[in-house]
Length: 517
Image (cartoon, rainbow, N blue to C red; front, top):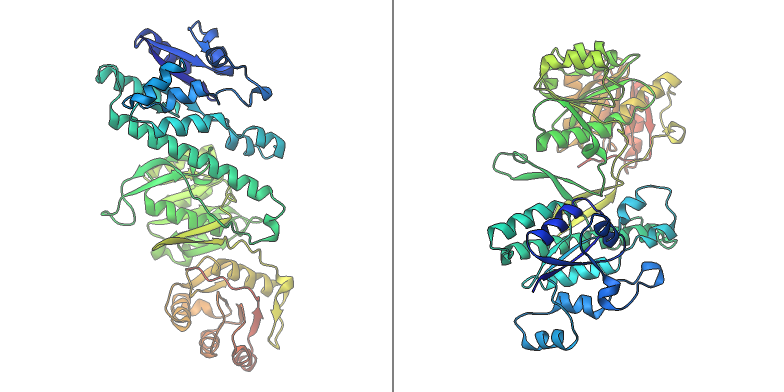
């Protein structure tokens, strides 16, 4: 007697070839529902509609098709349990050996952006997940396929094992099905939570958080050669870095991607003028804006040319020929920009190993950040606060000019993306010295000022956190700093303010802190 396969797919990719092989090579009978049955019939393949097989018509506009004992009995029956076999015989139910199901395109639908709640709800599959879960539960007795990518692998399995899929293969397919339904349900829950009026009244973070992703590619290794690593895509369609185009260069590494993301977050701070940032180990070693992109890059590079060697460069304008020429003058790991002019592409080919990426949507970032800790994970909203100088407090006796305030704003935006304790010294919209990740703020001040050296005369300083003592203010003044921006908020703020007044410095407090751990 022919074996029975149930095919019910939203994505018809590979469907006809699979069905034809099942019928002609492996002697399967096929039952199918809705559009799948029509597609098979139109292809000239023998198919029995689910409604004809069950004797129950599709009802509720197609909402109920496969929810029937003849379907789920055939899926869930254990062939080694006599009572199950007897129940099948008594109720004229054929055992089902293969279930091929993929689900209504819920995530693709909500990704459109203009979809109504009603439209989204209609794309919540019910019968599909039920069949997948039932099939996966009973994997010792049948095979379940939930992705067109599995079709050829399944057929190869049949050919290699005498027409019957091995138990290990069926188990692997069952695991894939459970992952598929889990991700599907998570997407629905997240969408409906965001649509709920109650969600806005509660914490901006969900009570339950599910993070899922599909492996995009394995990476050579992680931070170090002894650590395995892979790159995963979240969501059903590429976005962010998974939507980038790699124009040239070697394969991206784990560290490249981490640094590229740090570079992306920094460069989007400057949407209104050409800007460049050079990143090393997630910290900027140079950042600048300019009248042209080439000028911005050169200023960022010159800020710390030694550290820029082997760095990651982010640009917020399409790469032109002049910028490309400057980029080829030193060794760089990666370059990312929203586009690249044809002439610039030819110039960059001279450095064929440099990874050049095009990321048109530089602003596309996650609304949350996630860190894994022992026994759980930490989630926070992304630090997307936009600096507003109108809300800053000028706490010193000396008042800044509009030009000085603009320079402080530039320094503040860069400091936001430096590992805490962060100190940034700037002038002419370019960094001169950066102190990052030190265990005390004075240490960061000393590093930033030492790097700036004589250029600190008449420069500006930003600190991501407040000054608990006036020692950092005195160090800054001694080096020639003329203005400081800091969050404020220390119990000893007045000590720092008094020091600024005594030394003739401008001091501005933002009332916003930007720790980056």
